Image (cartoon, rainbow, N blue to C red; front, side):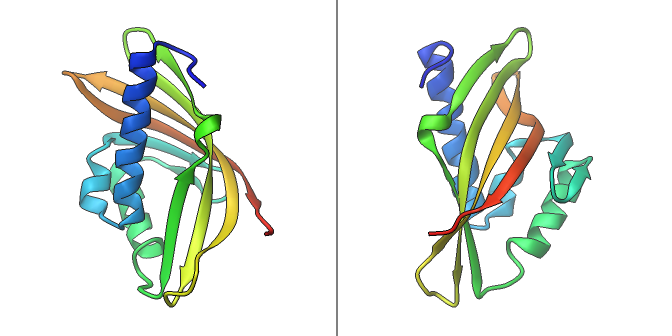
Length: 141
């Protein structure tokens, strides 16, 4: 669903793909470049994180610490909405699934959640400045 100009929608959709390709590969160096240093990350289960550095530290201990556990995030593409934010950037809203795979076994869809990202465009570079991740629900297949 396109909710703003096709160009803005395509640009943010493409950035979302890049961000989460890095996340899914546990490539935190590539992942962190998409976030401002003074990031605010609101998560309904873990609370508030107030910096990119803290987010990356937390992710490295959760997402990347157990070589037997693989976590993958997948955007629910039809849920994606993008709105311009005048003189700042864009608002991205959507839903995503999380999958887990343990010890190389087939992955299982385990969770669905909603998210809102506030993208800041500065010097022709897009970065996420605020994240809200909420309404995490288990998925039973």
